[in-house]
Image (cartoon, rainbow, N blue to C red; front, top):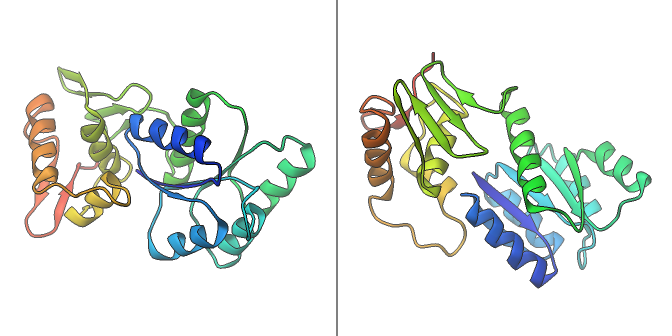
Length: 219
């Protein structure tokens, strides 16, 4: 999953970037509203974490501009403002959820998983195509009699495929979900991860469509 973090406080931003990395998310970090809108125009994100008190164009303006332009990126507002009026205004402008600072990282990650599920049209917390099951909370994958806890990048790759069973994702699409800004894209990493997942769960758990990419089959 590719996350856009919009946060001007350096200490909070660094802590959140580390938490996202530890949870297997690729993340890009913007510190003001103009940079956030430029990033949204240039890249596809699975979710944005948006602070309200930004320099220049604030979080309200970012939210209003993105939704006004037809932007569908899921948005969780992360703010120190806890008044009912702020929450109502944020939801009415198109935010998907509100998290008030200070917060527990576990709660934020759980809310992120829930919002991503809703936007993918998935109601249950465990992703499954009928044969393969993936638990986003524990990173445990089960396929037939094989079960294991995946590494961070194994999980990120399989999660991207499991959100849309039957949909082919190209190498570029998978790399986009594994690497944030400034991260070196390692040669053949996608092939290595798919080989590793197949070794743990079964050779046919991920299928290659020659010249196009990879998919997990529909049920």
